[in-house]
Structure formats: structure tokens, C-alpha cells
Image (cartoon, rainbow, N blue to C red):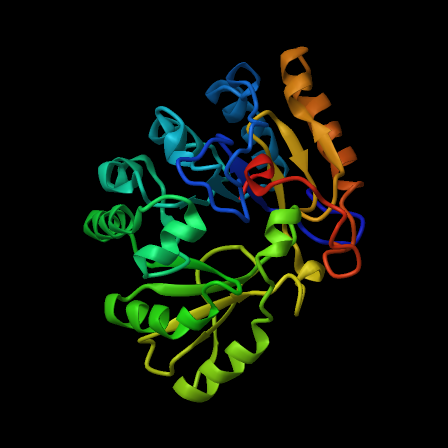
Length: 322
């Protein structure tokens, strides 16, 4: 039922539960940013649960909690529990910077979150402070340890590769090998002038080098995202590549994004959106929500224009949802 005009089945929702964050990663929410949404505009847990229940009856199967930093939303574990109980939702995951994870990992696991993605762009404290805007490496590592102790597996580490940290990929590979994490290398997307100035790095040469070094072969990992995975034949190491610029994956896009204030974005690289908050608060029926979703899918483009028109978007990632 959730089929767009290009025949793609949309089964995956990235749900932003807050646009706030305790870090200031320049490619996401630069220092000095003031455009936060008013909390009164945030969708309530009841509104989220109702909307996702409608979407699930239409074919939604996967939900990822994002932000901002989702662990800053009060009682987010209760929201996770409510989503996990919606009939039709088969997979509930969460993306986090892990600074708050040490105190929440067990509650998230108990609530029904099945998988975690943790943002970690460097293992060097100075580089972390420079990229993330805060000296938080020890907090992140403590969060990772707590997640492992709580039973999360696999744990995926997201490394956005840019001019400032490209030389650290090998160190991150060794770290993941040592601890059993799945590494995901991500090309920097041109979301705003600040991100564009940070220096895009094509991941294809890095991919070829890792293939040669480890004899990597194609593999699969749980999750419905865009990463293409390679792994060692013995299963000891897995690395995913998210390459929206050098090798885009638009033909198989299966996802949409819902912002904290209820705006459904159909593509990370386009401005088309549908306002579900207004519909919910104006008393829309379930059928009206279904019709609005079909109208939204008609707006989903065939592909983004990050390469052709990198200046097109001035929206930061925290405003859209990760």
C-alpha cells in the first residue's frame, strides 16, 4: 500500500523525537544554531503512536528513532515501548551519539529497541572535540560498553568521512575488529554551507583498499537502510558504505522521515513535505491520514540532486532527522 510513483515500497520511517542535541557536529547542527522547534510543536507520544499505527496498517515495518539526539527526549524509552507494541512494526532501532547511553542502554533494550547505531567520527579526543564541538570521547566509549553489556548486537558505528578524519579510517577499522563492532563509513552530505566546507571524501577508493586488504566479500546485515555491506569470509569484520554522492542508492530508497514537529519529508535532498501535525491536531480521521500519506508519496522524487545542485538545501540534519 505504501508504493510511490516509481514503484518503490516504502516500509521504513526515520522518526525524529527531538531536534535538540548535546553536541554541535558542524555537519549536522553547527555552533550558534538557534532555529530549534518549540516543544509545544513537537508531536506527543500519543500523536506519534496513532500516526505510526495508521502507517503500519499501510505497510510500514521499520522505525528508527533519531534526532537531534533522541536520548535527550524525556521518557524516550516509554515511546519506544509503545512503538514496539504496534502491530506490523517488525524492527525498532535507534541512532545516538551515545553520550547519554551509559545510563539508558538497559531501559532501551527492555523497551523493545533491537538495534543501535552510534555516531563516532574519530578515536582521537582532539579530533572528536573539533568535529563534535565537545570533549565527549570517554562518554561515547562508556555508552558503547553499556550497550554491549545490555545485550545489543550487532552495534554499528557510523563514521562520517571528511577531510578532517579520513586518515583515521584504518584506526577505526582496527577498533571495530578488536571490539566486534560493525563499521559504517558515510559520505558527507552537502546539508548547508558548513557541511559543504568540511570537505567531501569519495569513499570508493577507501572501499577498494579495504577489499584488497581484508579480502572482503558481499554480505548482508539486519536493517532496512541504504548501506552496502562487505565482510571478511570468516565473519570477523563487516563494513558498510553509505555513498549518497559517489554511488547513490535512490533507485532502492524505501524510507521517509518524520520531523519532531510532524513534517513528513519524502527525500533528504528535497524540500517536499506534508504537515501531519496540523492534520492530527485538527482532528483528522484515520482515512484522512491515509489519504495524506498517499498524497505525500506522490511527492517523493526519483532521486536527490546532491551532485548536480549541492547548494540547493540549507536545512540542517537536526531539523530533518538523522
